[in-house]
Picture 1: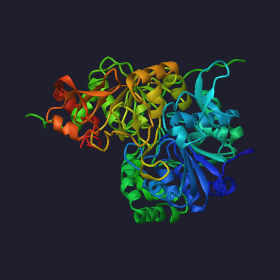
Picture 2: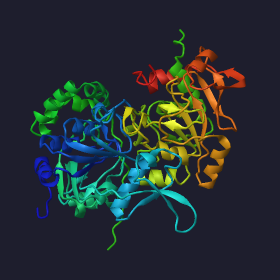
Picture 3: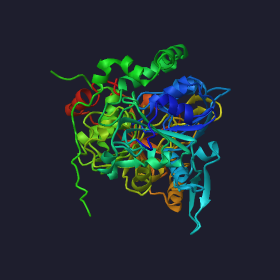
Length: 306
Length: 259
């Protein structure tokens, strides 16, 4: 097919992610591309500034593997469970070795939005009477040009690379998402380079049959990687559940640096690709994470005109 | 056969859930608030619209969501929105009645720290940070706080102010909130494993009910300042068997939150 952007994960990361880049692997709990994160670790990228609202397990793993020198975020934890201990080890005590730049959730959303719209800042009503602007001097008060009202501003965020996982895309990169949308769309439009990783590659006609569901147009996409189960242990709505058991297990793995290194060896370095990871997970895990039933949307009729 | 007596955590969750009676739109936080709000929807507040910062309005979770981004909050919800819409239109637009927050440290005025213990640049403990808490504290019409109480969490001075409460006192905080056009009126209740606190006009929290089994000495030992005690302090009403059944059998059968 002409204009196809379909690539292997190895080729996409090799071509589009460079040492020193700022990289956003977005997806709010949902659709986190662990597959891309693991390939970045395997290819030994260094000195990355990792950007995510919720760094989640994937950035704990990438920080532990030595890929990162900085982290831009708004909530740093293992959601519903506890801490990200590899990141904590590099940020606590007398000599932190990971540079942190932190915002609130709305601040991060606003940063991506300003980045996507080529605006010099995003205004919001957060941060008043908090210590956040002192901790991060890039959060600044500004006065409305139409009166005396004071709001806070956050600067635009334009990642060198944004990577999003999605349910489906066509070969040109037109990408559809359902379930939690997070700020994948904003993060993709804000980025210089975009990789989408999908559960399923579909025909262009499938996309065109339901245009309301398209989050990211192919025109801003550089590579399409097909990687079923590529978001595990996060999830893909309708395909598989979040592996909460693994999120709970991560607490003990991440707490112990030797155990964490052994985990990275076993599940990342010693595996050639995501297909091998999927095979190693085994049929029981894949079956355990299947939705317990079906919940289809009612279809709508767009009508034909002309 | 009678069920096991309520634990302190279960008392805290039930008391927090009951505070939601009559409320309409509630912004749900991760952890204990999550189970309290899901209990309220099944008991005192069946009309409650659950808002999750991950971009869901009107969630009807079929199981207790372990995280606030669980797929169960999507299926059957009224609306799924981008996070820009959720924080911009729903929360900052003033459409959220109650924001439910947890905290690592709180002071007598309901100011909250979820960022660091110790100095910011060289913290002893790095906590998760704001997430949506900072904007919830400013934009939600009122804020409920649910947290375990100890001398380490109820402190004279918080190490970092992540989310503003009644600042340095009630009158000044109310004036400032009005002047700056905040839609939120700040914290209205703090539910702990020992009792329930509300806020006086001076902006300071007052213990209004004590959970059965907890003592005032215990409360004083677990509060980093001399706490105000309501003259008509009462015992917190006992959880109903149905509330305990819902927690133990439906909401948290594995005991992730409650044991």
